[in-house]
Length: 295
Length: 328
Image 1: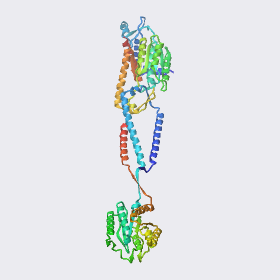
Image 2: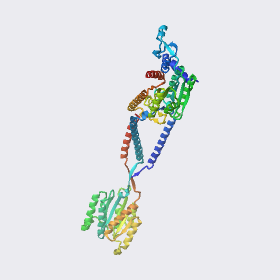
Image 3: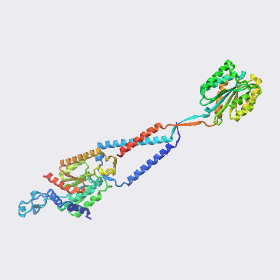
Image 4: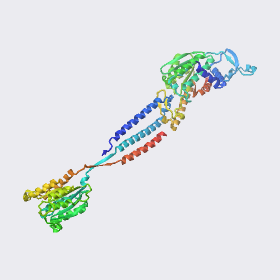
């Protein structure tokens, strides 16, 4: 049953270094859990903890760094906003399915959130409908969310329309939440800019883009390729043209820069994930960037 | 312009249709089979690029040129295998003729003889391949010139004899008076009928005999015998009789004998009373010969593949070049 979450845990515990997991948790904690006035206890320092929270006197007494823990000032709900249209069933930059990368990302951050006592909710959907899974604190609930994402993203599924899910979040959630959007390389339209700006004003927003496949990748030059949205074939005969490859590369870079600028201007922390291996370092960087942006 | 293998273009069209159908079937089959196509999202990242449109336009131009070369090559192959040719009809038999002019040079016949000579003199400029011989006879026959296709020589000889006739120069009689009598028509015709050489060749042989059949003296061959001899040897006799007129009724019996022997032996007989009609008689002999001569007209077909082959080679070269460029 909980095989998807098991995979996430495996990645967190074994494949990635233990230190990374600790780092991630420390990052998450310092990002999303502000310090209340109510001191709870001391615990050993883990990398990623705020230096401010280190109890220097206790540390001096104890001999190794200790961090002060406070009773969390507020509980957050982490809302995962995931595009489950067929665009997400396509290949990612690394050649893995974008779906697998998205599930690993959602699972990683969801798992950390649950361990910190934040319930995880899901808003997913296509251009046809958006669905909402309310937040709960259990691992089995997270597993259900991941299963749902996995079964929803299919090559023969409905088309993607992330704007519909963003509009849903904007319409339904009045309370401040942590909103993590998992999308792809597509450039946002002007309409979506407005929507995202409004969402960013109300919620804590983070953005993960799953990098799309490199259409001019050399090892795929002889393979047939089709656009999942339109079913149109991307002709084989032009995909080994060196001039076109240069133009494509610079165009992709330019698009990525524009997106980055946009998110920066809306003070949304964003990160592009290219493969499953880049998920955990990517999320770590995302949280780190988010912490610095907030200060 | 005609084509020799008319069905070749149809065969090409059918073959092309089959090939196109097979290719389409194959493509469809391959598309249906290829489940291992790579699914990608946002292909417009590539397809919306101006560089992509340029590359696509270039590629399309190459493909269009390739298809054009292919179509030209197939069309020209169809044309070449259809073998276009120009058709010319020729009747070689008319140019395969041997004609012996057999002239009775007794005094009464001179004006008709010279009319016949004039006609053949003017005809000799149009002849191609025909051979003419001239035999004159009175009591004995003299070969004035043997069968030849040296038309200058023929013309020269005919003119010379014509002048001799008009000048009443008796030298033309030389050798014609050696027999026993005068106007020995039977002997004359027999002599003419044996003037043909190259018996084994398939040539049309005819004698144009100009006489009034007024025989005086003892003949070796009678006219019917001579006509039968000619018929035996496959020689067709055209008799021209200026004496067969009401003005010369005393010759009636001779005329009847003449006509009968000629027609019996499969020849043709032309009575006439005016030398001016001779050209039309000769013309009708020509026409009659054309009608009688055996064998169909020969159809000569000359093929013209040069320009098609050159263009087809050009198209083939273009095809190879473009195929190499496209494959790259």
